[in-house]
Length: 111
Image 1 (tube, rainbow, N blue to C red):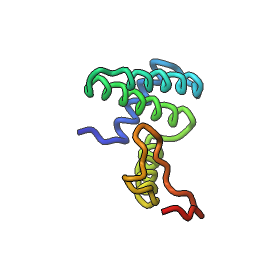
Image 2 (cartoon, one colour; image 1 turned 60 degrees about the vertical axis):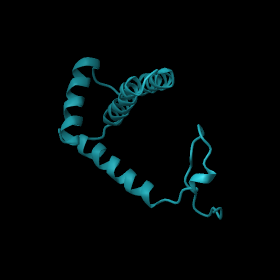
Image 3 (cartoon, rainbow, N blue to C red; image 1 turned 45 degrees about the horizontal axis):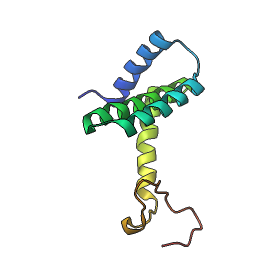
């Protein structure tokens, strides 16, 4: 299996060759919105997986175009997951299907 940082380096080289330089933020966000709709419309889990992966690679591309290095993007993924694991989340029984689940904010006395 390929190393994540190597994957991001390879993606970045391909993206610059294919789409050019520049931040392209608005175009990337619009593309992510379209891919989100395609996840909703997917008829099979495998079809949805392809759309989820499109969203992931578009997010990586956006971070790179914002000036971050492949190593910084990979480290930010690890750091964010570490942070999310340290946060307090509502119990499963309080989570509403098809609605975002937000972590408790500092000073929130819920739960």
